Image (cartoon, rainbow, N blue to C red; front, side, top):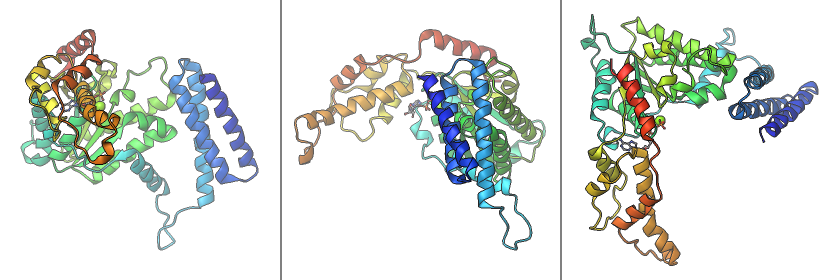
Length: 382
Ligand SMILES: Nc1ncnc2c1ncn2[C@@H]1O[C@H](COP(=O)(O)OP(=O)(O)OP(=O)(O)O)[C@@H](O)[C@H]1O
Ligand SMILES: [Mg+2]
């Protein structure tokens, strides 16, 4: 399967080269980009480090050529006066940034996040207050520059980061580390540089890097490829750069569900580390309420009971369970052929939840949970 993928990429690259030689540049560009894209997919499935390295440098080479061609065909960019050349590189990168990084405020608010009170408080102190009241954070009371959310998958890290952006009046840059790496390979480090430049211009800013482990893994690990190392170095440089400067109001917020894979250099730069753990019983009840909002419930549905029997479930497990359960009345309506007749679905019953529950298994095992607890003991809080 993956061998075929590689072969496929090579065929497309061959076509690209032919087009290139025959002067059909825009076709060549498309094929170069497609070949690079397939190679990146191949890299993800391959477990052979040498092969990965080869594919990566090929992909880099194709993208470089695609870029050269694009620039050559579009011609240089001039400012209105026609004299001074605007920084073409910079504006091109800004375009790339706009595609990779979301700058709009997310719609999530703190009310959408059940409990997690200590994490919320920690984030208030580390992110909201320094942005709202920089005057309080002078002298020895230094604001945190790097804040890390860590914990098992599906417990609300991404959700919390989005909610926090809504809490304060800061520009929110949301970058998914994996797409930074895969989409802009040869250029990712420039992109990171540009991202921080923009964050500086738009400050106060929160730079949120989700799944930060895909950039910030331990250096020198076996299958690290050249480009990834450069991205990592660049991110370290940028984080170090904002650290020393009191006047810069930029906070880097990272999230990971594999904190132990973080490079110690990054661990140090995320000075404040916030554990986002499995929801307790009260939190689970709240998650049930949030994810059944505005749906009619039968009297026999009791969220206290459901919260009790879902010990070990993550927020996302419960969200999924709710989605299953509240679909059942719709499915029944559909099966009985009444969906089109504006018939109202019946309220959701206890048995809908119980039936859906029977089909589910919590995703986080006790063993995994222990790993998080241990990491928290060793590196959590400050
Ligand atoms: N505390 C919570 N309150 C409400 N909903 C929650 C909570 N935790 C998780 N959820 C639900 O689970 C979904 C997944 O949560 P989220 O994406 O924040 O997890 P995560 O911790 O970032 O996981 P991952 O490590 O896999 O990225 C959310 O979109 C939400 O529907
Ligand atoms: Mg997440």
